Picture 1 (tube, rainbow, N blue to C red):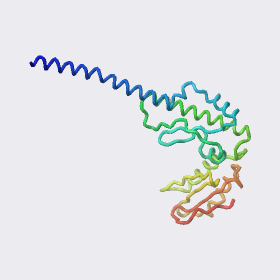
Picture 2 (picture 1 turned 60 degrees about the vertical axis):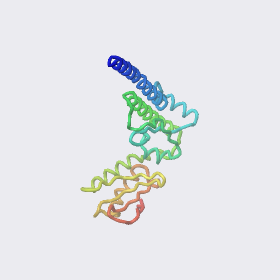
Picture 3 (picture 1 turned 120 degrees about the horizontal axis):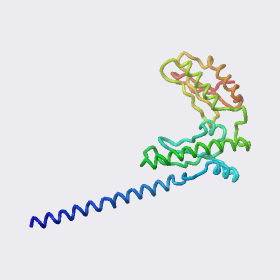
Length: 220
């Protein structure tokens, strides 16, 4: 009787071991199918050909990829928002930072590289076609960089004075540290605006970081 029990147990054990690979195989197949559906498009894709085709079809857009968040890459969001507010954004990689495999990681890198190249080429096409609101010497990115550098000098401690770009109002919003008045910052900020071709195009809205007042627009 004991011999029969042992034999049956061995049969069940072998059966369990034989079933496990089938379940794992199914899981792998499901993951591969999902990955192909989400990112399979990038295999062998040519960003230059895609950008040229979209330009010819008068279908300009920017590409966005996701990780911790979604972002337009290859062209700054400041430029995209300020210069090309009517150009739509298409998300081509909706997968998050929770990668499923080495293959997933590789495809995400390819998708990002594709989007970066495509967006740079599309920006060049838009400029060549006279589309957008940033004719030379308009440079929103340079202006933001200079304003940030200016704020870094006046913030000696504590909160750092980052610049917020508000495309809807064509505005830069800044908060000044305690002891630095809006009036004292007006001249250097306005010089940055003029130097980057933004006089009459951009608005600077400023307030003190410790004040409850609303942002006030500077007259440049």
